[in-house]
Image 1 (cartoon, one colour):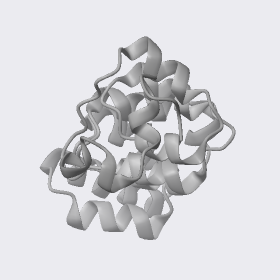
Image 2 (cartoon, rainbow, N blue to C red):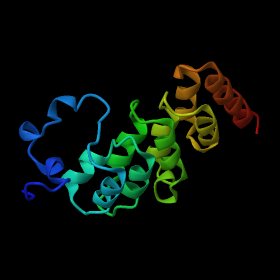
Image 3 (tube, rainbow, N blue to C red):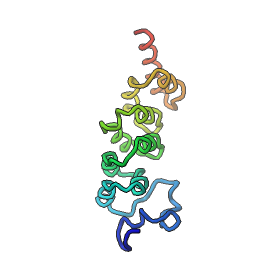
Image 4 (cartoon, rainbow, N blue to C red):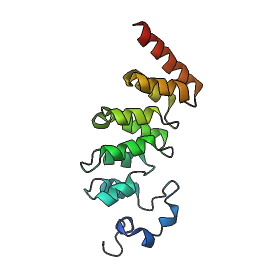
Length: 157
């Protein structure tokens, strides 16, 4: 493991020895400065990426999105997470590497925490069956209405 006294050492410790292990079901409360977490996010260490993936700071997420060890599954999990902030979801949507992946777009469009303008901008890029699902199950009336209007336009055209 990492040497004692290193700021990132707790992130690599086994789950039962980490001081924040009991907080894993809630939004993480990073103890390191944001600059240090950004530096850690550049490292190709899988366990470290998994721990930082749900960092509340959008700058850390922006750095993680550029990490070559990050998988599509990781990004989909973050995009679908209800605990991800609107700012973090916007960062994902602006990332050219990940927004081109259909599962990422779909996860963002189905995330109730995503800003309405972001979801509406993704609707034209959804498959018809996914657009129908959004139109019938979105918790927001404005999103349902936009999806329904887009479906009608597609059927007419």
